[in-house]
Every structure is written in C-alpha cells, then in structure tokens.
Image (cartoon, rainbow, N blue to C red; front, side, top):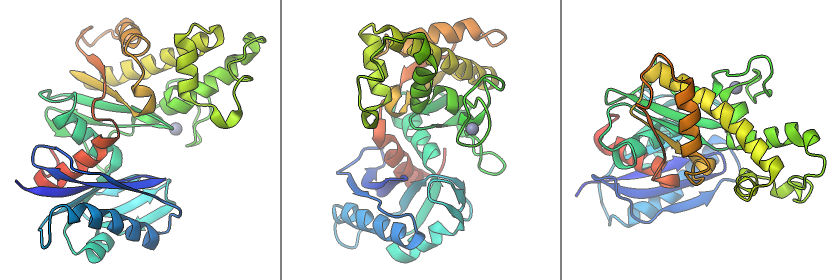
Length: 316
Ligand SMILES: [Zn+2]
C-alpha cells in the first residue's frame, strides 16, 4: 500500500495525517497556529507532518500534499496571495520541500476538500460535482466531466463572491455588496438575524445569548424549535442560499451538490429538503430535479483526504 501525508492548512490550525491509495486516513495530528509569518507556519507544518510520518516507519518514502488557503499557482507552488495569512507571492512549496526533505504538492484548501469529497465522499461515482462549504465564508470547488476546474489563474470555484443581491445585500468582506458569501454563509445567518430583529421586538434570540456565543448553530437550533425570529432568519438565509445554488446549477448543471462546512451539517429537514424545493422553483432552462443536494460526508477530513490523494494520484 502506498501512502502520502495529507495536510490541511487553515487560518487557525494545521492538521496532517497519512492517507492511503483508497483515501483512508490514519491518526490526524493538529496544531493551533498562533502566528502567520511564513517561517513559523512552515515550522508548524513540519511538526504535524513529522508526527504523521512517524506512523509510516523510518525511511518511508512519501509525497506531501498540502491544501492552503488563497490563490495558489499549482505548477510553481507559489501562493500568489492569501488574505487569511496576509501573504503575497510566497514560494511555499519550495520552502516546505526544503524543510521536510520530501516532495510537496500544493493546492488551494477548498479545491483539496473538493477532491476528497468527490472521490471518497458523496461525490463518488458522479462526473459533475460541486462542493459548497458554508462556514465563516463560502468556499468550494467544481468538478466538470470528471475534471477539477482550476481556471486560467487558479481562481475557478470562488463561487462565494458571485453577487446575488447587488442593491439590497449585506457588505461582503471583499468590499462588494450582496456576495453569495455575505448572504448565505454561516456568518450570514447572524446578519439576517440582526437585520430582522426590529420586526421581532420581543425576541430573545439575540438578547438571550452572550454575544461571544452567537453562532449559526444557535439560530438553526432555535429555528428547529419554532422560535419565530429564528424561523424568519432561517427562511431569509435559505432564500439567498437557494438563489446562489440555482445560479451554480444554471452555470454547471451538476449531478450532485454537496453542502459542507459547519452549517452544511444541519439536518436535512431544515436544510437540504427545503433548499431543494426552493432551488427547483428557480431552476428554469436547465432541466429541473436533476441535481441532488446533499450533506457532505467527510467533514473536516475532506481537505486532508483530498490533499493526500492529490499527492498520490495527481489532480483529477
Ligand atoms: Zn465578496
């Protein structure tokens, strides 16, 4: 059995695990990141890779696959820019290879998660697949006719920044108004809750919880329990999510759309089922009822599985 080390590098942590030829993981090692300068991050990546490599035994030969946030030129291994880390034109692959002494392949983290979910999660067997991760922002990736789309400048799949409410939307972290991410990410749920608060003066949805504990789960739970403010919030958010998902279907006509990220784990009766209904209503030229919207299966492991798989077999 051949092994690679898959690495998921995020803004707050780095995780690594050995990944085998069939996309199976062994123990995952995680470290919190306390700084974002390149030297420190490379050092922390090396620590988790060394731990994971120890499982493969001494003198084991392997390639390391790394999923990193930002715009990454896969061919050269250069991070063109990464807002999470504040990096610009960092030759991360070369720096990692020097530090680790093993060959490294580097790709955007959301694209790695897409590879993992496509080959070993809910995308298994499909040819046209989209992963949408609903977290702090919206990320994801696109597989069309069995190929992961990278784009001319490695930007394909940045669907979080297509605009769905140019006039009436929330301001996005990117500066535009009404981006899909500003309207339909996990954090967008809170924006909708705040915007609707004046209509529910007696609601305790926001006043009953300390601000530090505000989160998307608080709203989905309250909506499931029938709290009126939370239900209105959830429905407004769901309408915006449906708008973006229907656009993605219009562009790509995928067979499967997987919902990942924290909010993607919400129960089907609250998320996948009502979303499918709203999306079908907004799907016109592309044949209706042809895209299955499902919860992603691999969770946080998708990125590591995808990065390791890329190191073993290349990009699909
Ligand atoms: Zn944006």
